[in-house]
Length: 235
Image (tube, rainbow, N blue to C red; front, top):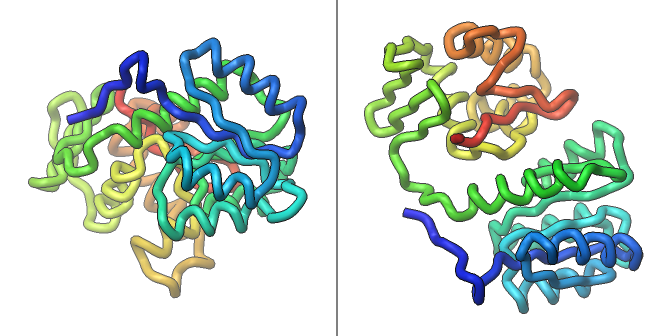
């Protein structure tokens, strides 16, 4: 079961960015897409606005004048699971991993394309509206029945090892969201394996050979370079 937005209940987008030009740009772009826009110019104002307007998606800059964006993410995650998309000029791998590990759902580097931003927002909204308890995940030819632990491709049963299934189940639970190497390693293998990404790479490679028509060009489990993996949303 999902929730539908009506004209008088538009999706609320909170933009937290200290640059007035960016806020104006996003306001112009997103207002045309029938979103309800709310703005905050620093971290403390963003935290207050998140509590007051209860946004459906937060667009967050990391370089805020009072609080670092990572700290803002951590504070929001203490009480809310609202999707957070980071929009930042910081393009280093470490910054992206830190934001995602803190609880961000996605990361776009400035400057970004309007089309890509809108697609990321729509994906975040779909995730937040999807009923988490749905037992069957379907995306194109892939079907994962979480209740029976059955995985099929185009109706054909696929045999997975327990570890491969645990990885896939974790990605299904966060479909459309980037999962960092550290997050997957911690949840599937435990803390002792967080610094052993090669273990994850081997298992993901094996998964792709079983799930993808062309493992070199994956259509289900896609790589976010230097960060982790993302399972594509159902289409």
